[in-house]
Amino acid sequence: MYLPYFDSTYFLIIIGAVLSLAASARVKTTFAKYSKVRSLSGMTGAQAAERILYSAGIYDVAVMHVSGSLTDHYDPRDKTLKLSDNVYGQSSVAAIGVAAHECGHAIQHDKGYVPLRLRTAIVPVANIGATVSWPLIIIGLFLGYSQTLINLGIILFSCAVLFQLVTLPVEFNASARAVRILDETGILYGEEVTGTKKVLGAAALTYVAAAAASILQLLRLVILFGGRNRD
Ligand SMILES: [Zn+2]
Image (cartoon, rainbow, N blue to C red; front, top):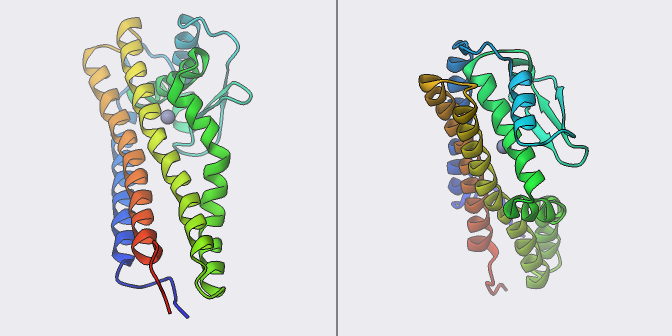
């Protein structure tokens, strides 16, 4: 019986984990740094979000508070923009940057931005893929190495990887929109925009690291189980 853990390909998982941890540490320190920089406009994240949404002609998105740190997100299902503790009521360059980024997602949704629609469409398959790929592979191994089940597991895992890849243009585009809007509307000035770019750039890296980690996991699955003949 083959045990699918702790073989030599496990270093691929470790590389992915290290990349993810490094990116996550970086976004935390960058966010903390620019959380201390108060914006000249004095607007809070919530106020900036409302102003940006109105200026984009969006009046049906509710800006709400959500507890936690870096838990900010836009939920397209009920059109709510949730801003976390250090964003909602704070008037730092970091807070306004994150609020504007989430507005970027609301604007993408409003305009029917194709990568976002694609991402939304992939979500259910990606969730199933992430959940059942390993169980399928393990069942395949138990059933005397059923390559069909194993391949199905690998294909489903690929859907989860595809989701991570489609997330990248969605995230980069939301940040690009955020920076442009903050600059154009004058919500942030000169140096403040540069600070926001750094915060959003660090946040984008976490998505790149997550995508890289999932590609490495897929690579490992293919190396271990991809169409090999077993006795
Ligand atoms: Zn985002």
